[in-house]
Length: 70
Image (cartoon, rainbow, N blue to C red; front, side):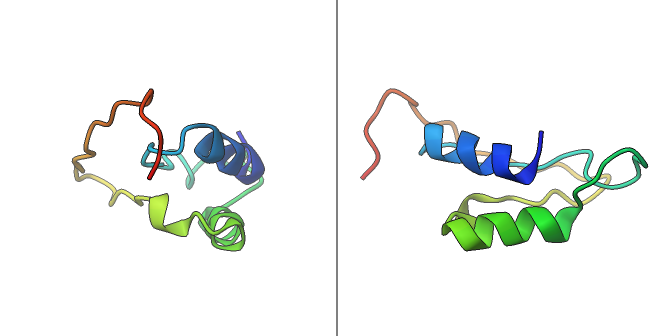
């Protein structure tokens, strides 16, 4: 999945929190955190990103994806 794919997914699921994982440490990845952040910043969706800290957990609220965004 590319950063552009992530933005497209975020637009398709307007209530979803986006949690990028496996961004670092894999040599075959061509897009890093900065590229992903830039794509979301440019699209106006940066507030939807939640960057996990390695080794810790995060809690993401559940939303009814059938509901209309406000």
